[in-house]
Image 1 (cartoon, rainbow, N blue to C red):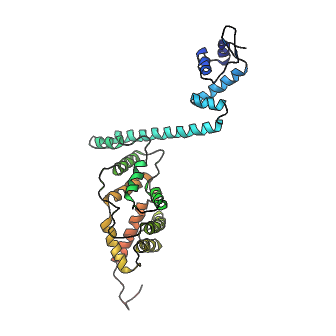
Image 2: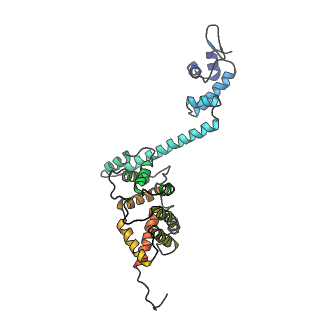
Image 3: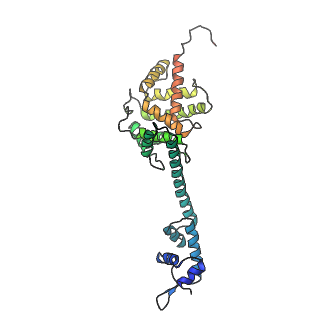
Length: 304
């Protein structure tokens, strides 16, 4: 049996360290001497080495205790620590990019950018963006479709952002938390069925995104037909040339500068690899406008 000093000497640590782990129940003594001094068996040395190894991984004492008592497996604890470390590294990268942004800003730009960045947590949180879209979406939209819109509208944040992406998110956050939105999208210009419209728009945007990835300019085709059909069916009418002209005017009148700016910033944050739903919507609106702007063919005239 070893005294606390002998155990400390064998382990290459201080008596204070052995006492610390003993007092917290990680290193129970085997027995006590007649004088009340702690005594440890040889197995305490292996346990102390294990404790020290776990602590070098910066595991909290509580986590070390659970591993030693087999309440949690070492694999689970390691996975949890990796997740926590990843979050800390992301926060540091965002902070670094924010500092680089401020360093490279002009004296005129710096106060406004500092205000924008100061309103955002590190690492950033997209909860404000999700709340913004929940306020924006029609009240009657089914939960399934609302979730689909949120998935498309709330961008995934990069783990290693550039200074420009930090600024884009800060501006997105400012839009989402502004006290007075410019318009109220819950008040449509005409009656329609939101579930039918948003269900069809999801398919139309997916088709348009394929053209965007291929860098094809706006044009007639399946994506535009699906887009117009979604609007027509949601209003209980048919897709006709007259409806397309009316829809183009409706879309032009209902264009919200705040929403347009939101999608521009979301594209800056996400990068060019994956088109946003806003980019797909704009592509389809341009395709529709170009189609109705063309003169109607003359009956009996030449064809191409």
